[in-house]
Image (cartoon, rainbow, N blue to C red; front, side, top):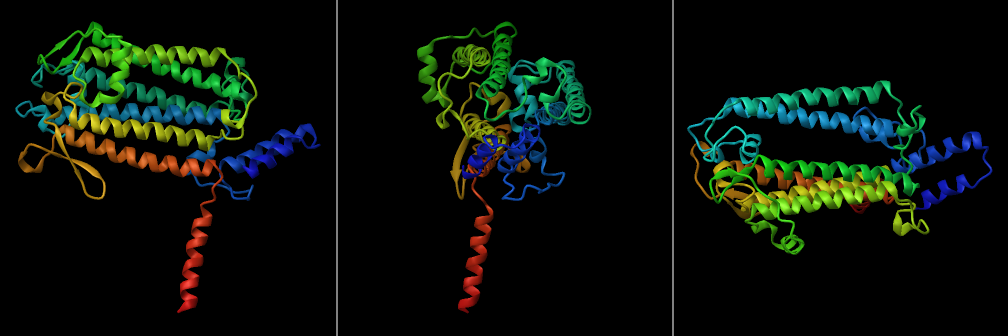
Length: 382
């Protein structure tokens, strides 16, 4: 925080305006990337975060390229699993991830997990592969051809997406667009269940599901969601999130900062490092929740496609084991999903703590120096 105050003092200084913005930007860059007092520090190609810290154009490039990688994995892995799928073995007893989710959406398989046709699954895989190329091309365009910082763009609309960490109106404008996209994704899922239908484990068949927008039920399920047994309630929760996110997104886009911009509202606290830490915390928490949900819930994760529920064990950390013996040491899809989600979530949370401390100004070199001093002290005692 003391370093940030120094940057603020530069803004109030008598430095010529022609160079003040660059000096202040350099100061904040040093703060945001934890350069530990060395403004001339450089980073290797692998330190990707350093290249997008204050440059929104590069930030968008990284987002687009990352989305392309995710889409490529989804398409390629779906085809990989399709090539290995054995219709004579229950789907839940095979090490699959993508195909069970498609089957639960009523795509490519019947209620028993038997193969009914590959055109739909193959088409979805190919669409993801094509989209991965589109996203990848967008990432390359923003990285190599378009401006590195959106505030330098010739387009007025593009300049609205610049990164100004101490400008709450700028930050809330960008947040609003994120919320709207998430809300639209929820609507797509709800409409798919309503018009096409999804697999209902209680019936053993695909059926159309109308959402139950009961706010009391939605609130109650905040505490018992692991045991939820109604697809209508599941869709109602997603419908509520859609309305809530789109409404919140519109609010954030349309409104400006109300009242004094204080530290409680983010003044002096927002940075690229802080945003990264919160993103890691969010995705880490979602992964851990998904792990517990997948391990025990058979409404959203039907046994026909994911295998039997799991038993929770604990050694150094929690883990789940199959409750059914499979030949050749195989595991159910549920075991793969639950354990992988949990450990990915665990490491995301560690990343959150790391970046959150850095955003707060903690100097990790102090830890290394402290350990070095202990070693030196032990040697001198000997």
